[in-house]
Length: 100
Image (cartoon, rainbow, N blue to C red; front, side, top):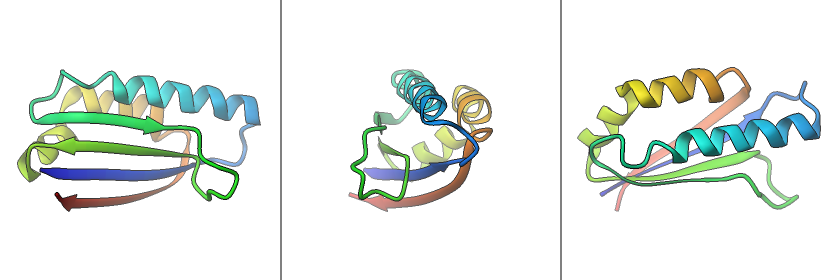
């Protein structure tokens, strides 16, 4: 199995209320991909970090293998969520992919 973990920081221009709405939209969009993409076993978005955090939200996803992760990256449903709900609002992205 392969884990795909991403940490995002939202753009600073948004108010607290706007950030909460954006995070909810990202969570809904990404978690809604479960069952749509072959090889995607689990996908969760954590939007409730502690005050000690320096990221706004985290994606924690699990794939059958590295090929399934590559399929996910190009899948039209994922690309639509990434382009519509994630990329326009994020200032930074950090990714770690690893085998379990």
